[in-house]
Length: 97
Image (cartoon, rainbow, N blue to C red; front, side, top):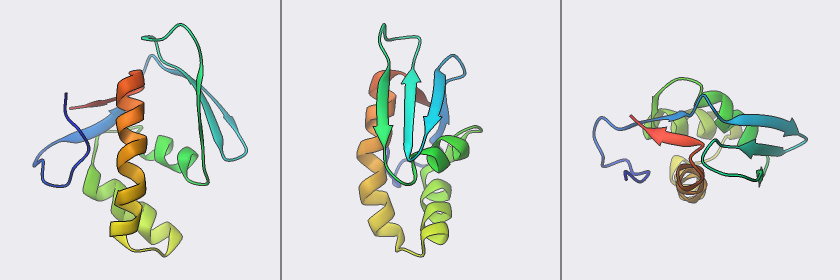
């Protein structure tokens, strides 16, 4: 299984189309087809991350877009994003292409 890293040339990340999602204020509630119960992600950018992953994106593009939106360094965004992407992959809500 691929893990989020800039060094993986060509790897792109995309949300799985069979994941049900509901949005709340700074929160996503997901029901991936691989799970029998909903899971939640909370944070100010989780909705934006989910939107960015509607189409396959390299990690660099996701990081750069969020860094620009939040006027923050890419390294800080990437450090916070990697565990979130790993969790989404573990749940089966996001996959590498």
